[in-house]
Amino acid sequence: MPLPPPSLLLNVIALGPKAAAATRRKATSLTLCRMASTANFAKVWGLKDQSLIKTQGYIDGKWVDAKEGGTILVTSEYPATDEALGSVPEMGLAETKSAIAAAAKAFETWGKTTAKSRHDILMKFYGLMQEHHEDLGKIITLENGKTLTEGKGENAYSSSFIEWYAEEAVRTYGEHIPSPFTNIRNVVIKQPVGVVRKCSSIMTPWNFPSAMITRKLGAALAAGCTTVIKPPPETPFSALALAELSRRAGVPDGVINIVTTQKNVLEVGREMCESKTVKKVSFTGSTAVAKTLYEMSASTLKKVSIEAGGNAPFIVFDDADIDAAVEGAIACKFRGSGQTCVCANRIYVQSSVYADFASRLAEKVSAFKVGNGLDEKTTHGPLIHEKAVSKVKRHVDDAVSRGAQVLVGGQSLPSPGTFYVPTVLADVPAEALLNTEETFGPVAALTKFETEEEVIALANNTDVGLAGYFYSRDVGRVWRVAEALEVGMVGTNTGLISHATIPFGGVKESGLGREGGHGIEEYMNQKLIAFGGI
Ligand SMILES: NC(=O)c1ccc[n+]([C@@H]2O[C@H](COP(=O)([O-])OP(=O)(O)OC[C@H]3O[C@@H](n4cnc5c(N)ncnc54)[C@H](O)[C@@H]3O)[C@@H](O)[C@H]2O)c1
Ligand SMILES: O=CCCC(=O)O
Image 1 (spheres, rainbow, N blue to C red):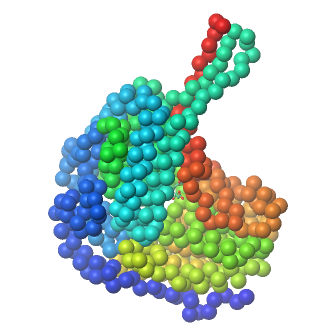
Image 2 (image 1 turned 135 degrees about the vertical axis):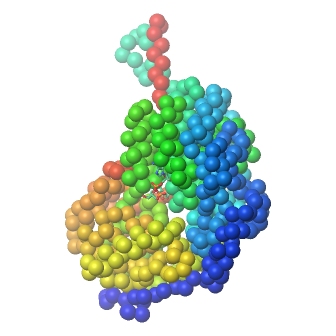
Image 3 (image 1 turned 180 degrees about the vertical axis):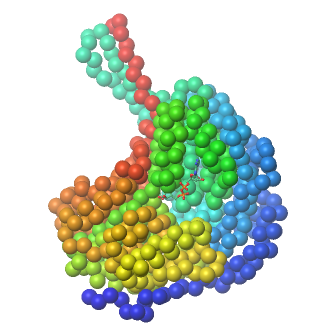
């Protein structure tokens, strides 16, 4: 089948009038928003419960400003319009130390609570996240830019981690191990990481402002750990709203602490990794930052969990259901406008179905409606910031300079600089940046292959290994390829794999440990008690 007609090649979808008008208002609103109080901020964005918006850090159960330089603020912006949303304090080493001290003190009581009482508090927290679904979804959309459907979808996903770990809290069973000696009995119990005056630290990215926190926080709280959270500067408000709801749910003072920072991230990160009081570091973000934090955590040999970058292959074999493969590719590649760690990054299609798959995918992508995520008609929102758009541009330009063809999209939109048109590229060479680096944007890069052996070698030819996907109806091939892909998670005949119940995580340079599923284990130590003298 021939490739799509030229009419589809440059399908620019205009921003809605709302976004354009908002951009013109930018200068005025920047000034206004800087002056806005918490109440004004919530009014501007129309939340039902405006007290969910907090503009201070959260330490030892109190909303606090930065100790020093308290007026220097991190400003978060709505990516669809570039409008300032509000500010949070630029905290640093002093606040991080205070937060760690508060968490360590709170551990003395929280670490001794019963699993049932932690379950009950977490279920209350979960209930509050459900009750405030609309507001929490909207906060996510405003901070991150994803559509409101996706924002609310994230809140559902995020709250499911709190529910899941509430249920896990009461099932942290130990075991009895038969001894080779007649007078010894071996019993293993599980305890939260650290025994006295200890806590865990959590650092997360902007692409899931809420769910990347709860996937860690739920496990930590259920295990009996206390926490210091450093949210990303782009999306601090979801984290602060979660802290507010946790307080309402009865999570005691000091159990959750939030340090907001942008400029001081290096010193805050170092303290969270090097402090002897912190017994566990859990990070989600890029592989480059993960390596730095891992190295710093080595100084105290901490338990470390890392969920880092991916470069997911998505393979379509010639025996696949092509309609299903196209749907799967769209869900997998364009979720969050391509900004998820498990998004397909490289799409390999077997030669006999290549043209057919390419033309069907291009047709569907050309129908996307890009714009302000608050507009119901919008199917895909902006990228997080202009830097992200520059990376996508660089990758597309590189592929085109190496001979790739633009089937749809292939350019950014001028204003406010955060939009990249969903793009499909054909004949992307193996050595193009789109295939060798994580693009983190709305670009489907198609590459043709001939044999199963060849595509497995291509798919595994990367230092990272988070997720991988393939479509085939041959059961033998399904087993062979699933076993051969060097990734932590495989989707066969599906483009969506994420859920609270599954072990989420990668191999190679994509990370260490698993979240969701039995992820509570990452926040617990096993302790052997050998009973002698029997
Ligand atoms: N594997 C996963 O589950 C998963 C999930 C989401 C995102 N990611 C990855 O995250 C990346 C995108 O997110 P990003 O751009 O925000 O990543 P990033 O690594 O730049 O930042 C992640 C977080 O780390 C903080 N940070 C940066 N330098 C730090 C330091 N020295 N000390 C302490 N904290 C520091 C940032 O402020 C942010 O809060 C992608 O590579 C994506 O694949 C992975
Ligand atoms: O971006 C990474 C997380 C995505 C997910 O949990 O599905």
